[in-house]
Image (cartoon, rainbow, N blue to C red; front, side, top):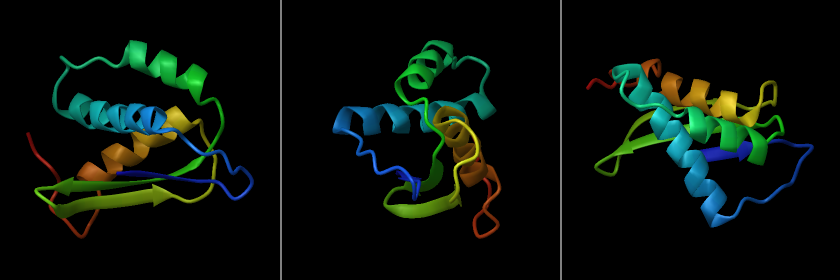
Length: 102
């Protein structure tokens, strides 16, 4: 689950756009465990499609149980960069949960 925030910007994302952003978050987490996954083409497409800076929250759920949730409420970096950063932090740095492993 990826939540996007920005008090100044009220852009709504389509279902397809939301699915793309979730795919980016998953790819970022997969990259931390494997060098096989590459999201270079996805990253390029996302950067062009979502150029704005946004705050982001990423919640990780496994078998309907939350396993991590981190966020950046204020925009500071590109949407693509923020999603990658926050997804990895949700997977590995949320002190309430053990870090995900392969």
